[in-house]
Amino acid sequence: MPRIAYVNGRYVAHADACVHIEDRGYQFADGVYEVCEVARGYIVDMKRHLDRLDRSLGELKIAWPMARAAFQIVIREVVRRNRVVNGLVYMQVTRGVAGRDFLFPANTRPAVVVTAKKVDPTQVSKRAEEGIRVVTVPENRWDRVDIKSVGLLPNVLAKEKAKAAGAQEAWFVDTDGNVKEGGSSNAWIVTKDGALVTRPAEHGILRGITRTTLFDVAAKLGLKIEERYFSVSEAREAREAFISSATTIAMPVVAIDGTPIANGHPGSVTLSLRQAFFDIAEKSPA
Image 1: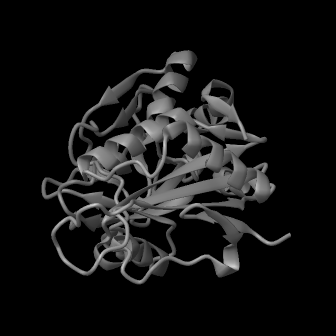
Image 2: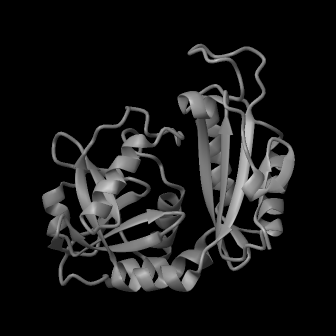
């Protein structure tokens, strides 16, 4: 069955989906996006993702392309038409189509694209059983990474560096040697006494939705969380390390820049978070 995309009011074949060449997302990266996990026929944490989309749109002064209730209908319909039971649904909103000019155009209608794809959960689980490797890269992004913007070129280059090194993710590191976040994930470590540590999300990182839900999961499991900076050297000496995102949930990190974490295998705390996540996360029928 061919994939279906929603583009500016129409459901079209994914292969034929297109946007105008003067869409400001293409011209200026003037847009934002969200990605929700679809698991076992449910859209995970949709409310929190749409809340963050609302914030991102507000920070860039982009209007909603439609009422929020209507947007949820579109999301569900795209998931349904693509018959996604386990996978991802991606939504992008840009300022819209206008002649190339740096200034915000007047009376431009926001443009919206929603797509969905299937993901084999057994493959993701297999990766979690093996763990992933990360490399570190110097922070070189703009200061407003708290906005989930489509301007992701530094992230692309960081992930290419990781791939070249045989790793699956890159961690951005600030000038003080502290880990910020991954190219498409939040970064965590587990201390020797079992506390979860992740950088505060007030500034300098994206407030990940999966990150937020993992706070709920940790509370249910009786795990302590410390929101504070941690250095690359502390991460290398940690009991465990992992990343979180809608595409990975809690994914064990087994090596940083080639240095194994602990025994070089996924840790029990990370795997317990991963196992409990679905039952605790908010779930909306697709």
